[in-house]
Image (cartoon, rainbow, N blue to C red; front, side, top):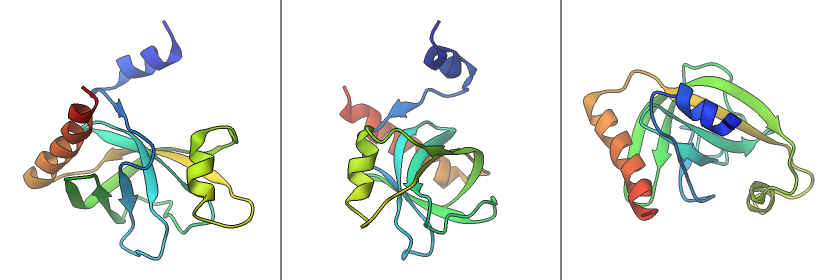
Length: 136
């Protein structure tokens, strides 16, 4: 069994990989470059972001999630991991390097959704299904 299969078995919800740049997570402060979501489930997501952007380290801030058709506002994200991403050959470097000049440091953050209202749960499900449906 691969590490990916083991990780997937530990999860409550299936995560779907997302085409890089298709979905984003924004802070309320729109002057901060968005994080690019790389996978999503009904329970959480992972995203890449520029290390030098002012992403909070605590879990008190609310975020916006954007897809092609569906958006979810005021979402609480609880960080489960946040690590430097050093694979300079990964396509994320090409995408994020276009946003900045000079050397870049990229981080990958995994988050669980905090307490969601019924409307937010439905919107997260629609966002997840939006991407999953486009992969069939």
